[in-house]
Length: 498
Image (cartoon, rainbow, N blue to C red; front, side, top):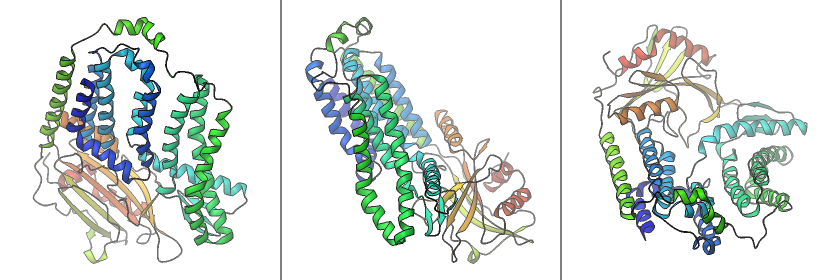
């Protein structure tokens, strides 16, 4: 009853995070497999039900330390605008509350189901750029083995059959995440020896990556024989519905002969758990259930109040963003702007400008400011900045770094056979911080919110296209040299006095 009360309270108090997770499970094809995790958790507990009743539940106050840590993680995630950190935190709070109410012996009996709860958190999108690049390299290796002439630029591959992109949907992240969850379940249920478990988990990671590279190669190879239209249809039907199911079945077939857990063997040994002297000693650290619930409620309300106070912070902003003057560069008219449109969702002000110098170099500048950083208004949030989600532009690769800036090369289909490429350099400015690192910006925002400190955050993107410049890198370099120190330039742009 106490556990039910605690979990219902956590779901109500953190309803936005649980709702956001559920919407991702249902609405995102990357995380549809998580819909199976709750029934799997119920099945795992049911497997252990006869043994669990032999264990002694006790209210255990040391688990409150883990609960407080999870609540603090939620606070940091909220301050940084990291939904995945908040969602991870609410799941850990659910785990810690069970430990606090049921005690160490029950935790030992439910150790794997408790750990498996972490798969409720929809995470993995962060791996997409790396997996895109890795898939492109594997595809090139398979093409060379098949003696198919091909060249690649980042995640784009050119063959006699056409021009192919290893897009986000083709990165293989969906299958990899699902296979990791599946591999962990099989490793626990079907194996006893840790080496075999580790080996099966390695297979669950390596095989999906290799299979996705083979899938991309197969699509390109088929296009060379039957054309792009047929290859695209074949990819969606065969590879989307059949190929990965076959790969999963083959992985299971390979591991089958190494299964070493008997079907009739209990999942846990309650006598060994009850006789463990370490668990017996830990079980002596008890408190009343009411005290456990009261402390958890106080912690949650305290951190929610801290979050609310930080959310109300708002740094003073200029009434309008000035158009910065750069020596040797003039502002051009709006009719000459490029269709490249960066995204600054939740910003309190933004502008896009185009500069040109006497040599004909052309540079686009995007500037946005934020009075506060948080959920829905994070300068470095997912899908924000130089490459908005759902647009025509595609990420090609990380470009040569320039100072502390984040440097990306993106492209879009052009009027001719070659795509238009655009070099984008991104800086973030907050307080004394000038960085191109999204992580550094988030850490700075967390510090500001923890100290209830108000700071204006600015994001600057300087970009040049090969359709407007013979050498985008040279054009951007000339502009930055004329602009001078970017920290002073940004401070002047947002009208902040030193």
